[in-house]
Image (cartoon, rainbow, N blue to C red; front, side, top):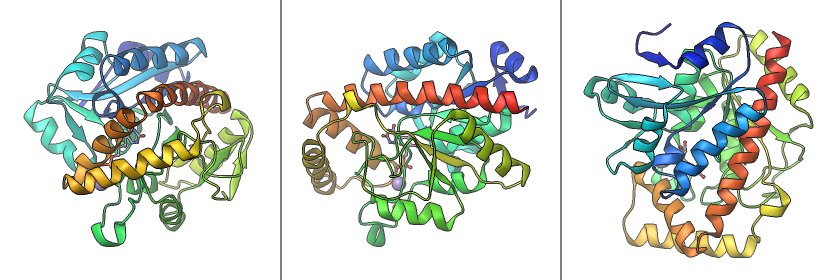
Amino acid sequence: MNSLLSIAPEVSAALAAGRPVVALESTIISHGMPYPQNLEMARRVEAIIREEGAVPATIAVADNRIHVGLDDALLERLATAKDVAKLSRRDMGAILASGGLGATTVAATMIAANLAGIRVFATGGIGGVHRGAEISFDISADLEELARTPVAVVCAGAKSILDLPKTLEYLETRGVPVIGYGTDTLPAFFCRSSGLALALRRDTPEEVAAVLAAQAALGFPAGAVIANPIPEAHALPEAEIDAAIASALADADRDGIAGKAVTPYLLARIVALTEGRSLTANIALVENNARVGARIAKALAALG
Ligand code: PSU
Ligand code: MN
């Protein structure tokens, strides 16, 4: 086990016994949602995973260690502190050397989960190819991580703040399977469908686990995207979301937002522009992904 890892006893016991564990990211807490909803969401998602019979492992960096499974005090710091670093692959060495507090993105959470031996990770949405990437070159490091680290990410697709067709093309090029969970099209986060066809569809946790197990048996270094649509009752009207996203993108452009600040800026603007409706939907879809993630982790654990 890597000496930089600090694994909670509950998590290490489950891993040692081959019981299901689901990793959770912390950037969604520190940079993806406002307080106090972020803290409530983080606790609720852990509870859902437990209800399903799996062990949650929220991941963050603090005090020169990668923590896998957080106590409530650290969860609260991540939800409230103003100076939490947003960590992707490139940031890991520096934050571990400095001892600072850092929240892990999808990419960094995958790295930590893989080091700990966790195969399933649930979140809201992944990063992707940004609109205008042909000029800005803004492509999330999440996509590279999905191509090189064998962790399955259960998400509700990606927000249409991104260029979703390019995101799918990139994942195809880099050999990352995108599995529609009970759907033939890529979910678009707040909306159940982006209209973009997916090559793969599976309808049960067992079927998804079988794909993941076969891919692992091949020794592929790649992860997978399990694209799980937002529950019907919580989906937002496409026109409302499209309008909010268009305004948010224009605001980001006007304010000269670049680099890793882009995604958090857009997320916060969309919450403001939809008067919180996007936040309610976001929480509902994360909870749904946690439930499905736990079921997939259980099915994988049953395969041994
Ligand atoms: N998309 C969301 N909510 C989020 C994120 C993305 O709907 O909280 C976060 C995730 O942590 C993701 C990161 O890994 O943003 C991507 O950031 P970037 O685009 O800078 O790679
Ligand atoms: Mn970026």
